[in-house]
Image (cartoon, rainbow, N blue to C red; front, side):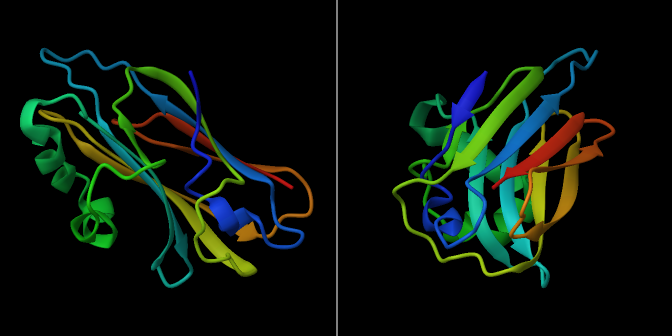
Length: 170
């Protein structure tokens, strides 16, 4: 499944000599449990001081009656504390439905929605997953901005997330 979330990075990538895209390959493992629920997932970029530079994606149950899925976003504890509680969902170009087990490719490319430019420095791609009747997991993938050549960084979760690969393409 390929998902293009172009609006989220807008002008973040539009500065001179900055990367044209950030791609993430996210594995949601197949778990052998009695009652399986697809995880809620949040993705964002943090600055070196852990403040949020960009809110990239939040996957949750968008089909629940009376927006009931929104109340469970609090289970994404870090995403909620840094972004969610001060944000009205759904967020155009950021919100999406939960994903089933498997590998999911997500691209954040130059888009129309403007956000502040990302200055050169050290950053972290953060992905958090939480599942009803399951666990919660947070993975951090550090990277330097901007990149002169294509670079891929890998991390691996232990329960709610599998392999996560972040690729920056100039």
